[in-house]
Length: 194
Image (cartoon, rainbow, N blue to C red; front, side, top):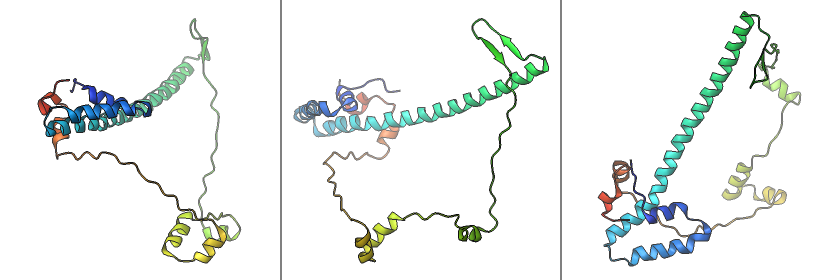
């Protein structure tokens, strides 16, 4: 497991809008350093790509926590039902405690759901059991292809929203380098001290 976290890697992972200029100075410091360009590229690239590894790790932990949560809810439900069965077997309706006010058996409460099985959808639609929803994607598609423009322009407003994405770095990973070295020491890869 990787235990070393370099200064720039930490700064990249914690950057906010308010600290952008400080991060820019760090970029400049790396670019102006006397290290060769390959080490500069690796240091910057691996520091930024470390975010991907953290996100993937968090995604895995969230998935595991969701599974654990589901298991715990199921376990609680089984424990409550099993306990109720045992209490009932012993003829206990209520058990009082010092820290817990009491444990009681709730009475079974019937619930009902309506399950609908449709035999003749067409007749139900004819009877008025339907709703019409505008297909906005189809309107945009027709507008872009130049079809039905008169109808579209007469019945809606079209606004073209333009968005200019800011320039940003693109880090191109060498095949297998991150996968094979994700737990390795970056010292070995970069030869850079923190």
